[in-house]
Image 1 (cartoon, rainbow, N blue to C red):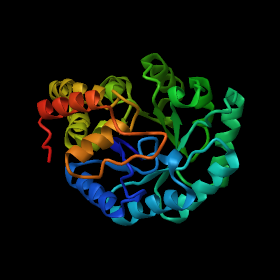
Image 2: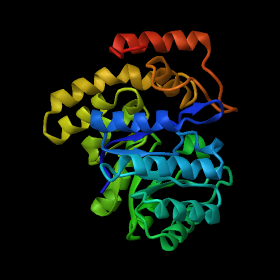
Image 3: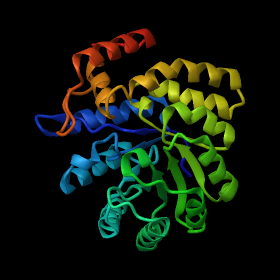
Length: 292
């Protein structure tokens, strides 16, 4: 259902508000560049600093701008099950094609707690659900055995795996087979994950180089292995640059250098240091990105 190059799109700000025009223009650019689906209000979209009205507005703009040309997978996860259900219901009402649900952060649920959380949401909202495992952000790792239990639930269709652990990815695919789609949550691991049987990436790098990320996955799907490898190695310096400071600071800084958005963040995120900004600019220039 969901596969290929899926961008975890940034949320542009201007004068402390969501820059709706810039967001719509980014979406149109992604469609032209071959992106296969869009995730608004994920980690890269600074969802943690959006209030409810802004969160819903970003989803609504994305759904309406895309206008059924691509799937929209709305980030609707929270660390409360009731809140997750509320946001997910609203995303469905607005026409989202799926929901990306991060493992509840800070409260560190057990594996049984994780299972019950996702089962409760899946039972309450009839929408395709993508699990999101990112222990570096949440302090809890959803184990393959838990994913296998959740894969039995009809509308839990995929997992974004952002541990960077290929053994864990392999175990999920071995235990679940075709009952769940495994998607990379870490740009560096996209090609290895495809080799193991994964189907794509929810990408940070695609914010900056959407065509290359989409072409790498398409090359793999078409059996053009050497071309996929070439694009993997081309992308690697860019992938690394997206995390020289906390995501999405580098991605938004790069997009501002490209003239696509304002360089604006919400505290506690702040502008990139001058030293790292110079490093990022050099990487972008060497990559061939056109800067303003």
